[in-house]
Amino acid sequence: MFTGIVSGIGRITRVAPLGADASHGKRLEIEAPTGYLDDVQQGDSIALNGACMTVSTFDSATGRFEIDISAESLDKTAGLGAPGRINLEKALRANDRLGGHLVSGHVDGVGRVSHFAPVGESWELRVRTSARIGHFLAYKGSITVNGVSLTVNRVDDDASGCEFSINLIPHTLANTTLGDLKADTHVNLEVDLIARYVARMLGKDTAGS
Image (cartoon, rainbow, N blue to C red):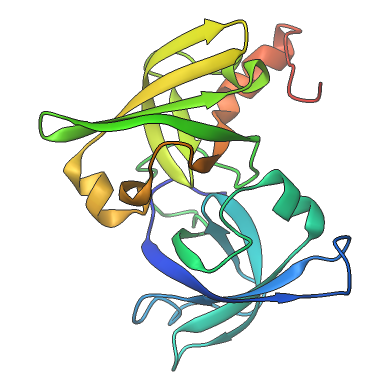
């Protein structure tokens, strides 16, 4: 489990295929911030842009670790198949503060940035996604975007899906990769865990459809 509070910004430095065709996954080498791996062990879980992955090898001295990602995970996520900056979060400990919300690290779908512009001291981020994901969104509810726990300010449903709006404060932009976003960028989305269970109990869970 995670909280959606990014604990470091990393960079995918190398992407290597694990096989000869598209049915195989890839091995990623990630460069972490100085000291980030000091308490990491082989087999630990680290979320990359909101997707929970397992540390297969690591080197604390160089600040680099590797993960293997399947073709299925690459197909269902965004931003993990090529070099670039990513949000990192280590798995939640039992005595940690729950600063964001309960996050499983399982990406529910991919959204597309439709608008990203300054509003006062902050920035407004709008993301378009499917009606399936929009079903779980609510005003002032929680959503995870590229691994960052955020509050939904507006939800607009239409015939082609759903668009939701988020306000990003300067602290969030400075301490995550969300400041790198631009129109048409694809982002990983995870809906609120509680919303999922409520929908299931009401017989309105569309996540598997």
